[in-house]
Length: 190
Image (cartoon, rainbow, N blue to C red; front, side, top):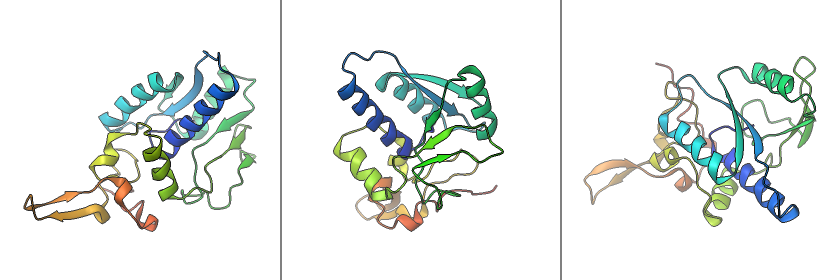
């Protein structure tokens, strides 16, 4: 499943690295599901298009709930048995997940595989920066967790008083040291 965030970006890079090492002549695109928010930031859509080329992806874009989207994917690809997820344990409703876990009984049945489940915020950023993996530019603007344009603001924890410029600026997401503040800019209501 492809979201527009940093965790899924790390996952895609890991998957393509393994696929390239194991199957040198692999040319088939990797199938990804992008659940697009009705109020997606334009930068998110541009980043998905960039990922499609960079990672050689076949992106199925839908505007549905995760459950409905998964049903649609399985209807089109009935042989699909597993779904790679860029979920971390600190994500909402993820603290009790296992790396390999079937979806809940009332969901379409597929094995969820979450290779970065036990990674921390700093691990994700260390990986992206070390391997120079492209990521959504919103992170350079002070966003640390991406929802959509109606429920996400830049993270207040990243405000920096730049005396040289004489104004407050937002530091990039990778400068945040307290991972407990990762979602401080999320779930903002109008």
